[in-house]
Image (cartoon, rainbow, N blue to C red; front, side, top):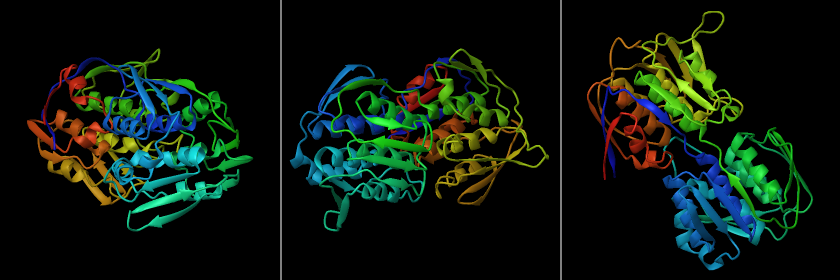
Length: 435
């Protein structure tokens, strides 16, 4: 395993640009196998999860050409069905959580798909019922092979259907959309996820000849078409990176400009940091974070303690709660952080408590943060990253701490953040990667 050695108490200064959105990239790359024609995708993030998915598509028989540092051309004219039945394919799926979104496109393309339960972050139970039930509504059947520890999906002919999803799952909605675009008849998906990532997927599919209406709402209508053609797409900036950079600036008492953030696709993220007292200025499509010696947490109108909770879009993404929690540790005031979706995502706060943060972990979903108002610095600590977002939260804490910290298992961070050490070092950080 690799690790970061982080020297704390170093201020950042300069400009930084977010990478392409990880969650969007995984969806649209899976969608390229819905057509035999060329699909060009720009602003692809150079991160472990995306790179592994690209490698998997090559193994599946797709032609992949790298046109530039972040630009790829995909052409899945022929798929290797023998590989798609192999143990090697199942092992690759098990190592990559985003592989679940291959099921819908493969069913659409081949009428069958093998799938192994994927790995990913250690953040608690992440069920796939929404994927399975939605695809079953379209006429697919599936069975579990205990020997191979994998599912086999089959669908002689998928037909459109009405469905009310049991949860507004982002990847579940994307998977069902990709299965439905070539199904016979009309599919209606109610309680669909409507994040900008899903909107981008729908727009991409429509440019390929699909007929999807209701984009940006939680009610999608899909009229099935026989075939899809090629297209091109530019991936949005990663809103999670934008929020993470706000956290780096706030905790290190730094001045930072985040370039080309796509303000219209950030939703409630800037307002959530503003409620913690962070000043944020809009400068065209850039975001300017001034240096702040102190920042104060807001309260509700009746004076009661502020609660920040995750919610389905356009609510606050759960991927930023770890960052917001860390930022609150050096604010003035108190806040309740309520993580509703994942029951293990707050356990990393034990590390912050050891660093001197004043946090009460009420239960697996809720933590009360009592801000230090910079009266005391966090102490350096040796830590291990359990998942992408907690790993970055630990990195933010380490950069604001007094002393030298060590963060192990940074492969988790690499899964979601491209060369984060090099990009922060260019701004004044001192992070050493040890392989």
